[in-house]
Amino acid sequence: MNLSRRCLLLGLSAATAATLAACTGSSDNNPAAGGSAAGGELSGEITFQTWSLKNEKFTPYFEALIKDFEEHNPGTTIKWIDQPGEGYEEKVLQQANSGELPDVINLPEGFAYKLAKVSQLVDLRDADKALLGSYVQGAVDAYTYDDVKGGTFGYPWYLGTDVCWWNTEMLAKAGLDAANAPHDLDTYLEWCKTAAAQQVYLASSMPTVTDIKDYGVEVFDGEKFVFNTDKAAELLDKYVEVYKAGAMPAEVLNDNYTGNAMMFTQEKVGFTTATGSFVNQMTNDSPNLLDKVAVSPRFTVAPLFIQGLSVSAASKNPNLALAFAQFATNNANQVEFVKLAQGFMPGTVEGNENPDSFTGDVSSDLMKEAIDLAATAMPKAEIAKPIAYSDDMQSYVQQQFALALKGDISSKKALDAAVAYCNDNLGD
Image 1 (tube, one colour):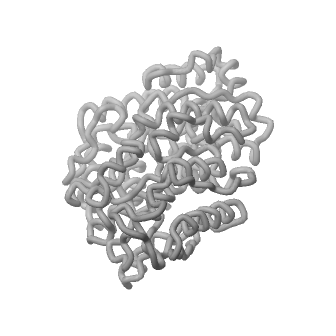
Image 2 (tube, rainbow, N blue to C red):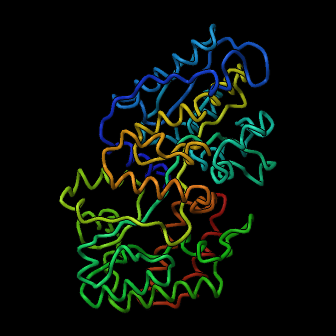
Image 3 (cartoon, rainbow, N blue to C red):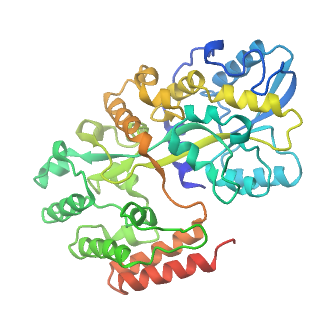
């Protein structure tokens, strides 16, 4: 499953139940009320597809959203369908191949890219370029593809980004204080070594291609992978030193690695990164941990996890499809959605500038603090990895990095092998 979707789905499935107030979507906030973005009255029927969101938590929201739109636009019908979480990409590709792609469809940026490449989606810059300025810029950029005419193929819908989570009890044992949490990578790595001297683990994951990007190394130049540089080797060498110092659990390098968040909830490590919804996971898995957890901003570039709504280029009612996609993603409706999807942010600039508008129902002060930090970071958040970087590539790259950390090969050899594999498998 796509990384960003996995992070978002985990948060949505773990979120505590809440009651959704009926979505009003007044005409002041409704670009579709009374007519289409292209002008003229709206009429007819379209199909709207979501991804694993039809359940007792979110169904009332979507029913209210659709009712509101149809009341604003008499003579329109929105048929809502939902697909299961697993196998979604395969289902979407099957729909596209058979000419049955829904008119408005929930897609992460990677899925949208594949469909845009074969002219299956509407370029929203052509449809209404000015409106795109109301969405978070990094999120708009995530759906803008240089090799597809520079077009934008999705309205940002709901977003997530990581913050840093610290086990204050473990930090205290190591003589460290979350109030002075690291603001840069080198300080964090020194913290890892300091903690290891007191038999405390902080480092809970290997470096990744994203870490290399955040270190200032170009990963993909638009045609091929190019991250096997001396600067990238310098970064990898820093982690080699951390591993040699005994500051990283050996299981981080193994195939049975359960992930940094899980290791944190098990109190095997004192640090992790996660979205604001991580509070829900801790509440479910390790409630006694909550009283000894502190949060701080990311000390590297905040990653952007994103879901968006795209419009099918084959829609028989493009004006209605475009109008509904704009309506569903306007600020008022996005704010109502993330009131339910606690721990995540709307895709609009206005929403992220006013996190109080969607955190009023959040009962956890810790989650509120995490959301505030995430909303502050959102304007500069970036997609974590290139669209061309597949899961198979990631697995191979991490294997090479593990060999380097263990000292079996040099960092430069690991990077050379990783880049060669990625380029050999481009387009698969």
